Length: 93
Image (cartoon, rainbow, N blue to C red; front, side, top):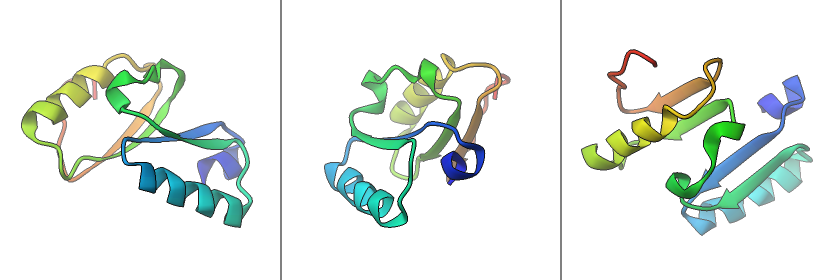
């Protein structure tokens, strides 16, 4: 709910369309503003515009997880990342 407390634009990106559908229902029920959900492949997304990331990496194999970390190297230096179930072994993070 960072967008509500801090008045920042928030986005959710997921390749699973049902997650996006459910997220939009929750958004409507909670009357959330400045947040949108996008059904897309994270690897096809321009992530330079975002600066807060929450990633559930439970089902990612090592190859996909390493691609994800490489992709996150594009983000701004003051960005924050929270990754569930996996550890990042790069100095930048």
